[in-house]
Length: 404
Image 1 (tube, one colour):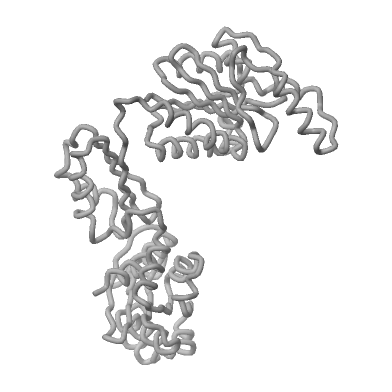
Image 2 (image 1 turned 60 degrees about the vertical axis):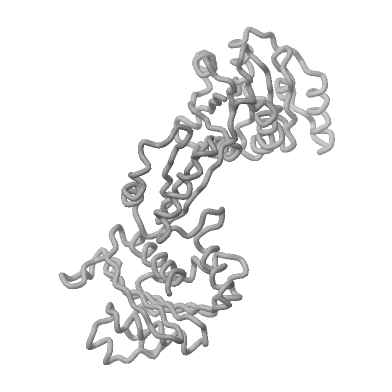
């Protein structure tokens, strides 16, 4: 099924607003098992709009339009669609009645301009708007099914969920295979490294696509298959990425870590220096994480490492604050002070200054202290200051989850 998207409004082209509707609709279509193969943004000029509608509708099974429905002069989507389809506009009595009722219920006088929203192309079906006055419109032109939806997200989204998506499912072609999507979410590796690991899969079997998404500092690998025999590809991906993957489900990295702690009946306390509280933030962003997170301390200066955590000043003088020895001492101190099962610590140089030849910017030491001992790790991270901090926070948590 060929599905296309037309987003309408001058505000999309002059930078006044971000086009979040495109992301919302394409994601909803993807999650439903389909793909938007073309998305176009166009302004409110009616002549240009008609040309864009003719172009995007050619060869399409479905076109979804958002924006340009409403009572003002620059709301021209319905007029443009009617011109493109060579249909007259007619006043829909039920829609007019709903408009009048909307204002009467609120003890407000309806502006006459609102009646424009009751004019729909002849033969078209109005789509109810539970959150506003601009009705959507559905109509078939040739082989193409058109859906005209409001541009206001809170009005558009219910129409997608209760009208457009059910229509797509009801009209799934009999020969169209159900699409299976596996998403593997990874941390600690780059997109190119993952691509190298999966290189042996190429050329991909027919009916298989692999797509990458990089929501920093993670990499998500989406494998889409439409044939049962392609299941082996899913298995290969999960095996190749086993050491860096944290989930194939919808949960976030933080949720996965918190659940791991719950499953292990473990608690954690964190002493942070260079990460500035980011490790604690990842965990405490998860509702109910207080059952496993006992404490988080940002001991940023050397003095605070000594006074708050009790790290031996002589240790800092001998090895430097950015060292394996100090990271271990921090993790052990926070674990002992709180009684947590696990103590975590980070200390490093996030930059842009402070690096040396021996310890350049991006040098981070992490430590994990448990009853069986303390493990430290040196990381050499790249990026801007906030990127190094974020990568270090994720790295120590991922190491904790995979630590044996």
